[in-house]
Image (cartoon, rainbow, N blue to C red; front, side):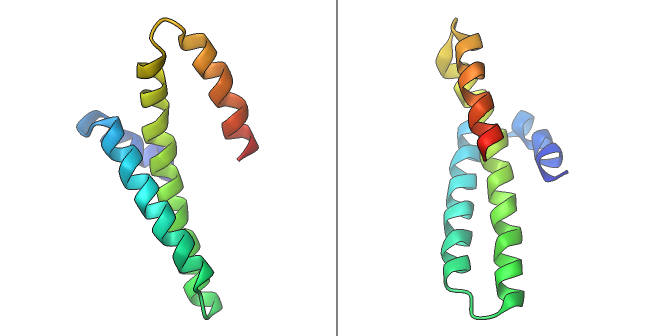
Length: 86
């Protein structure tokens, strides 16, 4: 649900901005997860980590499509198994 809600912002913001913001949020939340002292803090940090992951997903797909040019089918075939594995 979060990725679908954030898809709205792709049309408003540049994809690279979303990709960078997602990376920073995901990294900060990962550090917060490692430093968690309680279960409640860990759950909160994992929630923020999920928002960062959704931003990464929504921001990365248009960037991959723009970078691949004519070989769009190949980039899609590469990103599909990667997203399925995560």
